[in-house]
Image (cartoon, rainbow, N blue to C red; front, top):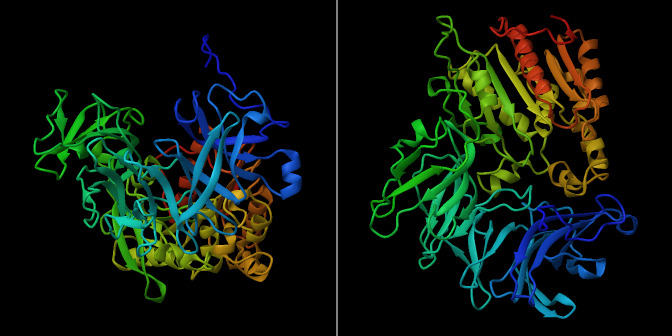
Length: 605
C-alpha cells in the first residue's frame, strides 16, 4: 500500500492476463539478504512462450524485492525444473532455503522431496549455490517444512509406518522422528500454506493431531523426542492452520477449530505454563460444548492435561451468528463397520433430531449416505448446517470415509489406488447395509448423494453396485473418467494415474469405470443438479445420465442453472437445490416435507 492506502504492484506486469500467478509467499526481513526486505514465493508461469515450450505451466520458486520489482530482471528464479514446488521457507539467518518438490504422476500425498539450498546474495540479488535432498523420495510424502528458532529444520513425513509425523533434520544431516504416534500430523496438500504445527516461545511444539476421523491439539517436547505427543482436551474435533500467537499479551496459539456443536472458526488458545494453571479471564467461562460457537464471545475453560492447568479457548471471530440451538443439533458419531474383503471402513453417523417432531411409533428413519469429494479427502465430525438440514427433517445421515480417505494413515489412503469406482462403492454400500441390518435405519429407504468426485462415487454406486440404494442425488458428478483424464488443470492432470491407471494405456479401464457408459445399470430414481458453465463436468455428461434415466421410465429431477460452474455459488441456487433434493427424497420415500417447496422439473412422480 502506498501513502494514500492504495495497492501498489510489487511484481512486473506479465505479457498476458494471469500470465504469472503467485502463492505461498514468505517475507525475508531486511538485513538477511542485503538492506532491503524480499519476498519468496511460488510462481506458476503461464506466459505464452512457456506454455508452447513445455506444454503446460511451469512452477518455480522466485524472489523479488518487497518494495517492488520494476522489471522481469528484478525477479530472481531460485528453483525451476521440478513439475511442482511448494512451501519455500527461509532459514532464520537467511543462509538457506528449504522447499518441497515433486513430479508427475505423483500427487503430493504420494511422493515428494524436501530440498535445502544454500543461499548466496550479491548486488544482483539472491541465488542458490547448491542444494541437497534431505528427505523424501518414492513412497514418502514430505510436507510443511518449517525452521525452528534454533535453526533446525522440521517437517511432517509419513516415512514412519505411513503416518504423517513430525521429523527434524539434525546437525549432522540425519533425519529424526519426533514424538512418534500412529496418528496424522498433516493433511493432503491440496492447497498452499497449510500449517499443522508451530513453535512456542517456551520451546514446546504444538500440533494438530488427527486419528479416527477426529483431531485435536497436542504438544510435543523437543528435548524428549521419543515421547508421543501429549494431547490437550479442548472439546474440539477439528483443528487446522495452527500458528503461534502474538508475542506478549494474547493467546499462545491461534488456529481454526470446530467441534460437534461448533462450526469452524478462528480461535485463540492459552496454554498452562509450568505448574500454575492459567487464570480464567473475567468474561464468563463455561463448558466448551455448551458455550463455544453457540453465541456471544464467551471463553471456555477445559482440561489442558498439563500440570493441572487449563487450556483457555477464546473465540476470535464467530463463524456466523448462531442459528441453531443445541437441542436441534445431531451430534456426530464416528463409527467403524465391516466392508468387502475383510476391510474395516469408517464413517460419521448423524441421527435424526428435531425437538418439535416425533417419528411414527415403530418406524425407522430413512438414510442418506454422503460420498465426500477429493476423493483424497475426509468427512469430519463437526457441526455442518448442511447436514443438520437433513437430520432436523427426520433423516439419518452417514458421511462415509471410504477406503482412500485421509486421516487413517497411508495404507488406508492407498486402498483407492487403481480402485476408484470399486473400493469406494463397496464401502458406501457396506455402510448403508450395516445401519439397516443393525436396526438404525429403514433398509427400504436408503439414499445416496455426492458432488464432483463424490458425485462420481454416487453414480458408480448406482451403475455398478449391488442395488443397495433406492434413490440417488448427483451434484455435478464426474460421469466420464476419460474426458476428465484428457482435460483438467496441471495439478490434477495425472491424478487419475494412481486412482484408475495411466492414460491412454489403461483406456479400457477408464471406459469400464465411467458411469456414463453404463447407465443401463441405474435402476432407481435419480436427481441431477448441474451448472451450465461447468468446464470440469460439462452439462452434456449430466444430460446423458438424465436421458438414460428418462428412457428407462424412472422418476427423475433435473435442475440446471445458468451462470453456475463446478460448485454452485449463488445463494438462491443453493437453496433451490437443497429444497428440490428434499422434495425428491420425499417423493421417493413416501412423505410430504413440511417445507413449502415448488416442484422441480422432472418426471415420473
